[in-house]
Amino acid sequence: MDTLTVNEHTTHSADTAHDMNPPRWTVSAIEALFDLPFNDLLFRAQQVHRENFDANAVQLSTLLSIKTGGCAEDCGYCPQAARYHTGVENQETLSVDAVIAAAQAAREQGATRFCMGAAWRGPKQRDLDKVIAMVKAVRGLGMETCATLGMLKAGQAEQLREAGLDYYNHNIDTAADFYDEVITTREYSDRIDTLAKVRDAGLHVCCGGIVGMGETRTARATLIAQLANMEPYPESVPINNLVQVPGTPLHGTDALDPLEFVRTIACARITMPRAMVRLSAGRQEMGDAVQALCFLAGANSIFYGEKLLTTGNPDVENDRALFSRLGLKPMNPAA
Ligand code: SAM
Ligand code: DTB
Ligand code: SF4
Image (cartoon, rainbow, N blue to C red):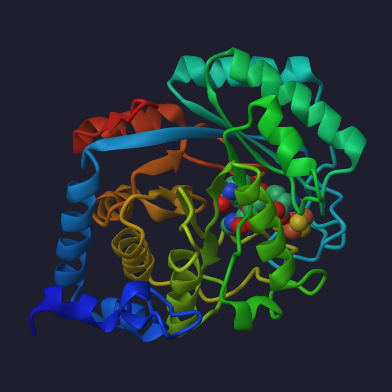
């Protein structure tokens, strides 16, 4: 089979104007990508990658947890949910000075984007006021800013935009029909509502998901379809491999085949050609060779720095050595 004909399985809005809501990527078209021989899938993803990006440049974002633990939600993967006993120490919202110090250190290490995460269901106005001060300060250092604060109420995305926030991260996490198995304290549609507010406020959207939660390949294809069919699709797409934390309900789930993770990255690249596809949580457990395959599959962004929010991430020294072995270079923010 000519692997380059898989695109024929997609439908395009212009071709089906009579259809009220035509999917640009059907789940079955994405399953057909997943089903390709590995080499064919990676070749195709690499072609799309090269048509749209410098194939050897990787963007570096550093994460900071600005409010840790004690979260009221029940996300089955998350070490910060108050109801699970994971050993994460709760920490109240950091001071603006502490955030500036962390952002400066990240910038010195070479990060161009600073992402602030909070263990909230959503921010109260007094929380948002603090985040606004943080965003202004980090922007003042010349870094791109991203925040992930949970669900937003009317007007909150606009306030963040006015403060100079560049990206808002809000993941749909998994296929809509698998969502209830992972989270019960909010609906998949709540996520979509917040994403609409973020988009309407003129913020760039960072939205992706987690794999390795015991979902089927069809569920992974559905997650990718949900992302790729957003209009427009997110500028930034984090693909997380579940970090299994003792005490969370998903601890003990059968680990995903690493090559299936690479396939997921390739499908994200092919279906969202211009997006920054971020190889996100799970790098520490993955090893260098699998990460190299992820870059070949079109990942062009990573979280950089020894910590994600509460769990570990490869050391800066390790990443520098990996980049050197692979001939990769950090991406300039203007790229
Ligand atoms: N509380 C906010 C929310 O849920 O939107 C923001 C922070 S939350 C920790 C951000 C994202 O981290 C989640 O949507 C999920 O995709 C990811 N995440 C959390 N725990 C994870 C884990 N153990 N492994 C992989 N990704 C995880
Ligand atoms: C995303 O998609 N992954 C990041 C970021 N966005 C906020 C978070 C990963 C968290 C992994 C578990 C932890 O460190 O607590
Ligand atoms: Fe709370 Fe976010 Fe963790 Fe869910 S993922 S428990 S909302 S911090």
